[in-house]
Length: 511
Image 1 (cartoon, rainbow, N blue to C red):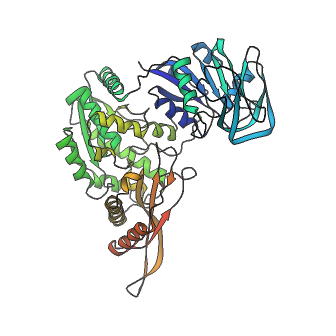
Image 2 (image 1 turned 60 degrees about the horizontal axis):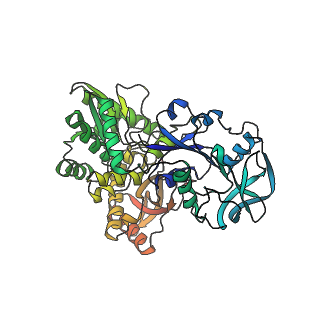
Image 3 (image 1 turned 30 degrees about the vertical axis):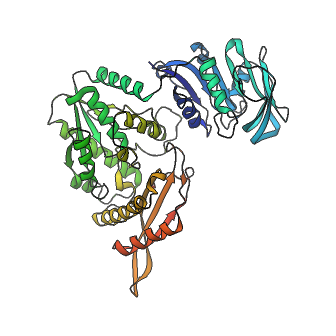
């Protein structure tokens, strides 16, 4: 079992970054809510616990608290910002509201040979983001650094393996922040570097075999990277017990089912069966405009179709799909505090009652980690670098009602857009690019005639893991080409606009 560092989330905007920085050191990390269930933690070989920052004050009513049972694990604890203040408060130190709040870059002056700060310059630049401050540390704690404002910026009780920093070592702007994380992981927690693609594959294959036993599994393939990696892992683990199915729900991109099926069966030898269920899905979606309703209808229809397919085979007990860690977080999983941003990403909102047990081998991975796993499984690079495509497909890129006519408009526009990005060598610089069809029409002039037609919006973002994203600044010349070709070649469109919203506040997909 891999060594794991548990990160307790107190609402910091940097919590995901802590997890990623630890994983980049080839150590497994997992994010849990601060009021986690102990049965979840028991799944892991915990070697350390990190308390994230957060916007609260330790003295607020109903402030997020420090769970006392974390000391039962007898592992080193690192508190960051609010997490540091929680440790200080718990051990009867003093935290006060500061008259000198520190935000952004600041210098700290290291006054100790702390194991956590080994290899860090005595005067070092860090990233601060706090209003409250530690006024007095608890008994038997040593102050290891202060900021230029004479505010305590780090402290520790080495004998109890408790460490706290007021700044954010996980943020790029903290000089030598990576040193601090490495010191914590390897000098203090004594973790092994065993979070690697090959170890993940071997462990996952073993877990799949133990879980599935002699039963069969339907592998839900969508044409995306995630489900393809899942299908390849399932075939590696259980061979013909994995029944790979690709359902065309009528919401795919132009020529997608043929292109994807060729890769699945000719290169990856997954023996995928294609089921064209366009009529069933589009009938179920007829007249539906609400985005959550669309997701849930699509999810329920998928399960209905999978159950029909399962009737053709014997002993199918499981459904495998390509859920990723951001999907779990955004759909409210792992945490009873999580705000559900949208229903399940893969096949819409899955119904509560279904005749399958879910297998989600990738549900603790970020997208770039999945691509690394895919490389180790010899999945073609061209396929691995495909932009994410949601399970509900074009159904959540058509705002409002889904009709065959609107699908045809969006498919043509999206195909033109993506081809231009490929031909201009921009595609691989972008995390995700697609067109959105708006539920609006505008007046235009085409061929000296008045038109009243649809609007296409271009959406392009850069990201590392999909949790945050920024809009991609495509050159004016290429944007102009996209607009001209879409308006001229797609009947029913007379206006093209550009979405320049980051995530947050917007999501990447529109619905």
